[in-house]
Length: 334
Image (cartoon, rainbow, N blue to C red):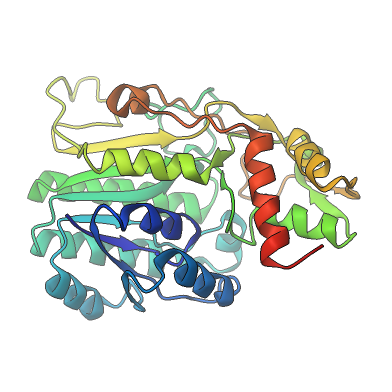
């Protein structure tokens, strides 16, 4: 199958392209923006794509460029992982999120509509649960109270996808990722920042005074789930009722899943796993909860398991060790 992946130079996108390139005809889109060091993105492309995949350097918000790629490549499946990421950055630069996550996603939907794409899979986020306090987070929960513009754009993506599923019978599957980590990870994420600071002997910033819990999910588990979902496009739910609507499915070919480890870890346990691997004790600056942050995330993944017989299970210490091995090697630290 011809698969178009957006965000191929990104953390998840590069891992996914690497896995799928031997099984499918894969093409990619990534603008290699400077939200973080573009050299890391270029190295991902070099290592993972190895000139085996055509990658277009295009902004998703450039409508004509996106349409031209759809016309030329005519993909059967689209996996949209490109987005402006980061909860905290969305407070500083809100317009970037509308341009990329809303306007860019609309162009992807229009490309799917006009060029007869069979199956759209797209990245949502656990951030959509916002002020929800019921645990674990379920795709049947209400998500009407986002705490950041980033979260609001991801909820908007789910609503936009449903509209196209309804209007054009486009099969859409939204994936709410829960704190993805692993080798080649993003420099703005906690594992990368903590590791870098500890290696350099600088203090780490521990928000909410360490009283945070995250459902850390290893990147290989994310990639495995996506690769299985390629074979299970969303379909109409014949039991869906407008009198008691299930937000995760529809009468239209629409579905939303959580992809998380289903096992939240306290932030201080996460730090301790890093310390064990590095054999160093971190200096810690304890800080208040930042605006937009959610104190705890915890994924209910039962429907994911029922549909693809897989759920993430990589243990924290194993995943942290893999990341740190990569980090020390990539930055040539003895």
